[in-house]
Image 1: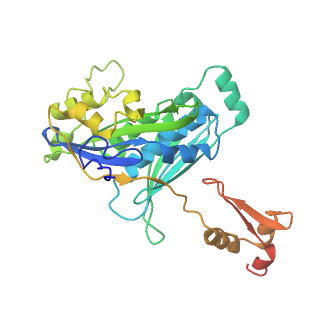
Image 2: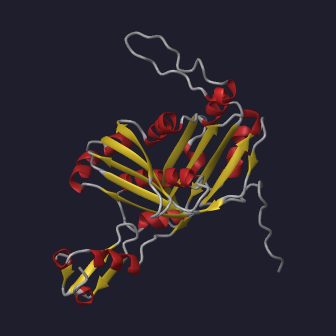
Image 3: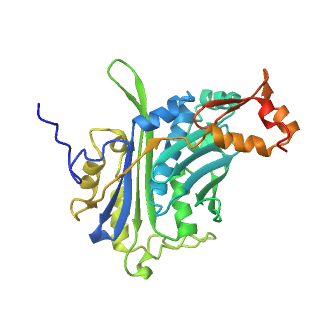
Length: 327
């Protein structure tokens, strides 16, 4: 039997699920990345069996960290975390270069039930007010870089755009989508997708973004100073529908061709994403060793110190005697 030929780079279906595909549109001075997530995302979410609204929110955060984290050119970790006053008060996802992902959510079950019963399940309603932090961690011998953006009733897409506008000063547009796919037989799996596009011309002065309205009756047009090439690229990205980001039959390459075929789009070898928690018995043992005897005693259950990883739900058990005299 002949081996099945795999699509080559640039052909439809080459990337498949759980691969971030970098792309460039030379005519529009635009670069970006696109991803469709399937089995690896579903493994992360199904492990926790979160309520559907929570899983949907966390899926968007996972896509966001995948799109942004895979742009790092060094070994390290990229972390996206929300801290808010809504029913879903914390979402955390991180990517360890090149593509190891993990994520978890924290929510108030009673408040979430009330919100769902009232039909208040939009992301901004579930998150409430607070902050979104984007952190780059290059290791223990380096200083962390962190950007913080207010979450004040905006979607995660809008918050990401604000971050790049304020912190990076790079014209950026982003689309995120998450949902469940019903498989033959009735099983449901989580899928998500996203695309980020950035305007990076050779002449930095072209990157100037339009002024924001100043209030008090000002009639500033926020679009007035936007470069024509970026204006077109942004409008094209704005046509992306949720279904295109979720449907595995569309695929990343097909979507990019649909968006930019008039200008020509170049794709590059993708980055594979994996459900891969970085916890280990050794790391947790090191943390426990650093605690006092009293602190460790508070964690003893049925004669053992038990620690459960919030990300992957793996439980580790230790004999308290092995830490005797550690402090």
